[in-house]
Every structure is written in structure tokens, then in C-alpha cells.
Amino acid sequence: MNSFDNTINRRNTGSVKWDFMEQKLGLEGTDLLPMWVSDYDFQAPQQVLERLAQDISHGIFGYSERQDDYYQAAIDWFKNQHQTEIKRDWITTVHGVLPGIAMALQMLTQVNDQIVIQSPGYGSFRKIIELNDRKVLNNRLIESEGHYQLDFAHLEDCFASGAKALIFCNPHNPTGRAWSEQEIMQVAKLCQKYDVWLISDEIWSDLALTPNTFHSTLKLPSSLTNKLIVATAASKTFGLSSLRISNFIIPNAELKGQFVRRLDAHGMDCFNNLSMSAATTAYQECETWLEDLKQYLQDNIETLNGFLKTELPHIRFTKPEATYLAWLDCRAMKLSDTELEQKLIAAGIVPSMGCAFGEEGSGFIRLNLGCPAEVLADALVRLKVALVVEQ
Image 1 (tube, rainbow, N blue to C red):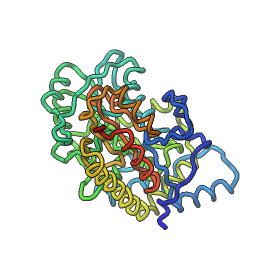
Image 2: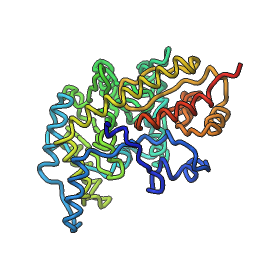
Image 3: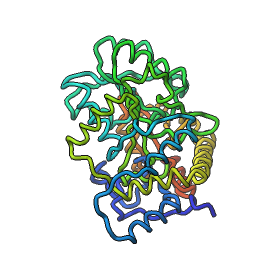
């Protein structure tokens, strides 16, 4: 049996997805099946578990610093996986992608500045913009028959109106788009034209699905990278979210120095040895695990796709080019978001509601397919109960 098939009980482990639905979503009931938070229900790779066990058995957890092998592992990973050359001097680390983006916004922009995000888009981008007293400027994605494209004309209008920064999700959550080289180049040229900071969240970069390809903004010509900050992590790739380490890659030496000083100003100059060990080992030893995982995820996607075509043909689903997230268009049911959510909860399934990703997500739901096939099969039964059209 493939290890991804193992169904592991995550209840009573402090899991946000499984244990905090009441606190986070106001939902009660131990029979609810969570398909919302985007983390895996798979164990991390065995090599990572063994490395962590070795570190724990040592028994000393003093102050730690990033070693040469940490940096080299990240450099080699980008070169081998994404044909992207990065330099050690470009890399620093932060305790998570969102904290790093928030600090970048504090450093580069002022109170009441406008920050552009794509919509529908990851709701936490909006949260960190607004809680830092900046203003969200939505650049709505263009959707046609389930396929999403960037609205470059409106993006330019946003920049022309005085926006100071763009948070660019590449690949995109929740739609699963893996942006093309041409699209990324056009974004970068507009940022340069209007002197806009480009903050590229590339945490999903390793999860482009065959035959699609991820293109990093780090492959842009150097003339377009002076105002570029790229955020990456091993967490989505290898199921290490709670270990809280991310790479911020900044080609501009002066900008990188500013960012490091900002981290020091927050006292973020100590590093979690377990996090560094896990990420280093994952990058060095777990490429085969990732390839097997992506095939498993694609099988889950095909299972969902076939089920919807047969059992729920009124629910539109475009297979993602990247991520393990399914973005389902339920608008044909002509329900309000509240009514849609009530039907889903009554059937015992908890997705992320599309309206949480902006008003353009109204009528959609997002399902996390990073789960064993047995769990997905259970979810599909519940989904049919919730979304079947009564005759």
C-alpha cells in the first residue's frame, strides 16, 4: 500500500483543520469532514521524520544558526526543480511566508498606501494588508469557462492610480493557475513602469502538475528584479507547515540588507534547528517522494473530475495547473453563499467557502485534495448529498 493511502487520525493533535472548526468557523460536530485548511493529511517524508528523530534524541535545543547545507540545499533545489539560478547572498529566512510579506509591506509602504492583490485570492493577503493599515486594491481575474487570466488593463489602472506594491500569488491560490512566462514578464514590466514593488508568493511552486510548468519571477532579467521580493518554503511541498520556516529571496543587495535589518529589529535573528533540519533534508533527499505525491494528487484530481461529470454535472470544475486545491463553481445551483454553506454542513463536509477569497469567489467552494483516497471517497459521498439537484 502506498503510504499516502494511510488514513491517520489527526483529531486531538492541535490541528487547525481538524480540531478548531468550532473556534475558527463556528461549526460544532465531531462528524464533520474538514476539507478547508490547505495542509496535507499525509505524513512528512520518512527521511525528514528520521532526521527530526535524530535531532530530538540529541536532546539539546540551544540557539541555532543556518548552516551552509541549508543554503546549498535551497540553491540546488531551485536549480534542479525549476531551472532557476539563485545566489546565497539573495537568501534570508523568516518564520513563515505571511509574516515576511507583512514585514515587507511595513518596510516598503506607508499607512493608507494601496496594495494590489488578485481576486479571487488568498484571504490572508487582505488580512495582513488591512491590519497593517494599508488599503486593498482588487485586480479581478478574468474568468471564462473556468479558466482564469490576469486583467492587465485593470492592473495597469491600479498602478496608475498610485498603488505601491503588488502581492502576486504564483502559482495562484485558489484557482490553481500556473502563470506563464509571458504573463509574469508582463506583470514585471508593468511594475517597473509604475515603480511598484513586486512581492511574489511562490509557496506553491513545487506543486505544478503535469504537463504544466512553474515559472519563477526569479528568472526575470536582472533589469526587472530591483524591486522584487520572492517568498518560498518547503512547507506546502512536504507537509511541514507548523515548523514555520520560509525563504525570502531578494536579488537586490541593498533591498535585501534593508529586509534583514527589519528582521533584526523584530528580534527575528534566532532560528529553529528542527525547521532547518526538516527543510534541508526534504530538499536534499525527498525529490522521489514529491514525484510520487504529485502523481497521487493528480489521481485525486481525476477522481474528483470523473465524479463531478457523472454525479454532479452542474458543478463546474477546471483541473488545477498547480496546487492540490479544487476550485468548484456551484453558481448553477443559484444559492446564496449562506445557503450553499448550510447544505454542505448539513451533509457533513467543510470546504473553504469561495466568498472568503473575495466577492469574485461567491458561489464557489475550495476543496483540499491533499488527503488519502479513502478520505476523498467519503468527501464525494457527502458532496453529492449536499449538491445534488432535487428533481
